[in-house]
Length: 372
Ligand SMILES: Cc1cc2nc3c(=O)[nH]c(=O)nc-3n(C[C@H](O)[C@H](O)[C@H](O)COP(=O)(O)OP(=O)(O)OC[C@H]3O[C@@H](n4cnc5c(N)ncnc54)[C@H](O)[C@@H]3O)c2cc1C
Ligand SMILES: NC(=O)c1ccc[n+]([C@@H]2O[C@H](COP(=O)([O-])OP(=O)(O)OC[C@H]3O[C@@H](n4cnc5c(N)ncnc54)[C@H](OP(=O)(O)O)[C@@H]3O)[C@@H](O)[C@H]2O)c1
Image 1 (cartoon, rainbow, N blue to C red):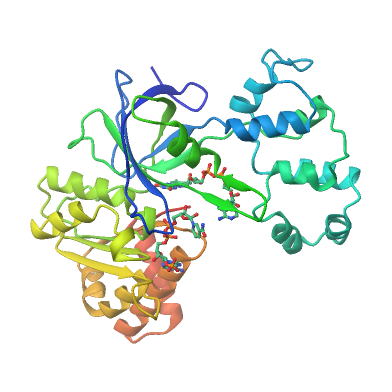
Image 2 (cartoon, helix red, strand yellow):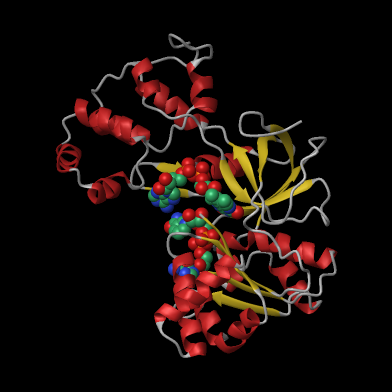
């Protein structure tokens, strides 16, 4: 059977644990998913697609705002309104269509003005942290026809999560490392659709819809003698737990170097025990930790790379594969800039030469990214 987005496998959550500490600013959980008789086979570097269900409280608030009833079957549909909002549509993040509909039917000076000026930056700022219900409530007197409303939503999307286990060590299981997204303003609390679905609804024994998302562009070197350097702050460490488990199980002789970063050592050092053990057992030959908030000045993974620039460059010259996983918006860009800087410093060369050097690394598929 081929499982995919349209035909997901219903898998059981075998285990879930909170990884982040009590005083962390983050809520990061480790999930173990049983692959049952799915025959799903994965490799380190692959991700798992999870199809979430929407939050019941939000669905009920939305139905009440629409002045509708949960059991209503909208014209042209086969399911109840509650079912449609739970399973079929994205009901958190507003689509552009919905924002334009609200704008055209609402007297809201700020939004009307932003859209009239086509000011994308101001719109992004206005949207930030607001969900569909907030937009509907910009004018509480606005009546919204149910079918029109549904036409303004987009179908529910799966979310991808990097797999943090190796099947050689955990046969028939997939592990994930997920940061639960929650935020609030003065009047409401919000939660990311899939991360809160997992943390709040998926207890041990629950079933979730999953499918494999292979990533051929983020693989361990075929030649197990090759050294690898892994840079993965925060949840970016996930695929590297899989890489390290796999390299250990295969008794690969290539050296392994991990750069991990988090806010504090006490509360945010994910998989601390396993990482320490791998260091002790010499699976990890080198480990650099950047706890950004344990001192006055921020320290990030790229600062640790620079501290180690000579050896870092030597590993690359010796054929190391370089992997970066985690935040795409800032971290991966800053790590990339640091890589240029390290190459410039070690080769005593111009920016252009470092660009060519990195282009070559990419061409040789030795600089691989899994960023989001
Ligand atoms: C290949 C890949 C691998 C990934 N691997 C992992 C992984 O291993 N672990 C992991 O945790 N994630 C991973 N992600 C990210 C993951 O797929 C989801 O994007 C993430 O969990 C958020 O999804 P959600 O459904 O909870 O939130 P959504 O419902 O998608 O909501 C997110 C929205 O909420 C808004 N938002 C979020 N936080 C705030 C805030 N504080 N204030 C205001 N607005 C906010 C954002 O603007 C965003 O539009 C990966 C992504 C990709 C593409
Ligand atoms: N709720 C929020 O306020 C908020 C903010 C950011 C991310 N998130 C979410 O939290 C989840 C976990 O994020 P994450 O896995 O990336 O972990 P994270 O906990 O946000 O970050 C891990 C480490 O990376 C550091 N970092 C921040 N900017 C960096 C940069 N430019 N370069 C290198 N390191 C940098 C962080 O430091 P500092 O945090 O000390 O700067 C922290 O030490 C993500 O899903 C993300 O969307 C939430």
